[in-house]
Length: 251
Image (cartoon, rainbow, N blue to C red; front, side, top):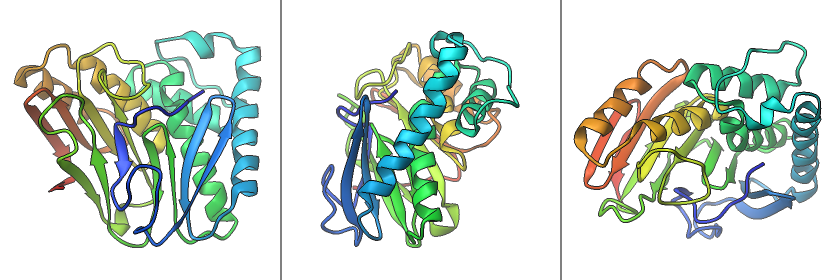
């Protein structure tokens, strides 16, 4: 499951894990490796904790019956009998060409966020180690951290209300906890599904095998062919590539 260290993405209307300017109430929820920072209309720690427990139990129960789900770095077949979060992870892995656990942080963030929305929250942001599910009624900016790149912390991804709810997830070889076999300082992906965004970010990060424009362009080109991806930003050293429905703003 996912634990948060230094995040490659962070909500910009606040310092990391603080919400003075967001107009939302901030609270944290932790369970085993899961460490969520949540911004919502009102505090709802108990409801969020129950949602975390439910999604973790579904994923962990499936792993006990299907151990390959935990360890595979390759896509696994769809399983119509699996719980909803597991089905989302399997589908995301197939779409992006990675193992299903590449989508775990995104699927947990979205499961918790959507449960809070079902329980009456009007706005919610759930951050799981820098992988984010957002549902807001006003424009929002997410800052992109990119390791030692001079672009790190200087660019943000601006989201319009009509783009949300959505997932915005990032893979990095130099920032945060995520497993990456590439050299990207940041591969950030926007998708309606946070599971797809998470899995695709892993795939694109792996595609950046060197910090040059050719490698960045290859990753951006690949993003266009991953079903469900609506936008991408890739940073490697001094090189940046972007595609789709993403608006970059200077911070």
